[in-house]
Image (cartoon, rainbow, N blue to C red; front, side, top):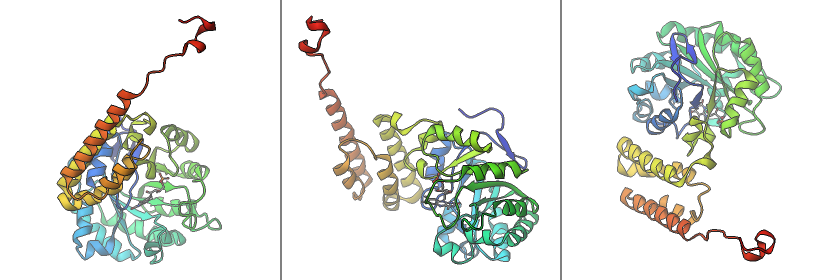
Length: 342
Ligand SMILES: Cc1cc2nc3c(=O)[nH]c(=O)nc-3n(C[C@H](O)[C@H](O)[C@H](O)COP(=O)(O)O)c2cc1C
């Protein structure tokens, strides 16, 4: 249930709730964000969009920036390395009406970090300070950032980065508790997130390794953070935002959501592209279901939505038939109370 009083503020923007869908390239599009918001995610972040793409008016980039009014607070996340281009791009997308603009300082992939953007910015806190000064002066919406703990274990400069951000107008920091070099290896360092929270005068969102509902409160207790971001665990599992574990989700609930998500995808992307882009969600939704392997292979190769729906309907009917045919356990006489048939 959405809290009636704000959990925290990003400058003057209230945030109701303490679990948030993390920005994820290829996943956190408008259809999936809408679902996660319905299930309790407290903010919407776009996936990261490049400053170059914005300035070149790439159609794909602007598609990623589409949002619904119900998504407020809506955060546009940008990445880039050039201070002037970042400012120009941010000014341009501010016109589209986001509540917040966020700078990505966490992406570790070579295509991004290898070009001085994403996590590469962490190597230069002074530059981070300059970018935040420019963005917070140029924009009328709050400017926030998402970071990692540093480049590698020998350069854990997260407190310097926090200082550079805060001294130059940052309104919130989200922290993935790993270094760039770690990528996704090893455990996320929640102690470091706690240290950041202790030092910060702005809200802190903790991120990394929430795998089950209990981890949300565990991370909050361990770090004191204002909210928790969930990425990988939320794929195919928006129930995490209700603090409900996937093992407790029924097939009927999963199927209903699959149909609804598919509908949103077809509406947003059109039939052909919507169905293809939905495949990566489907494999996560059906993970762990019994007798799913062959059906899954067909779900992710079929080319018409009607065919997809028929396959799902058939799977549901077969699952119901298997359930009905399951023998009800009755104790055999030899195992019943001391030989007396009861
Ligand atoms: C497929 C994928 C795409 C991602 N894309 C982004 C992105 O666009 N922007 C960003 O800040 N982080 C991105 N991340 C990082 C996540 O937001 C998050 O920080 C990271 O996965 C750790 O959280 P988790 O342990 O809950 O997965 C991405 C992660 C994944 C798995």
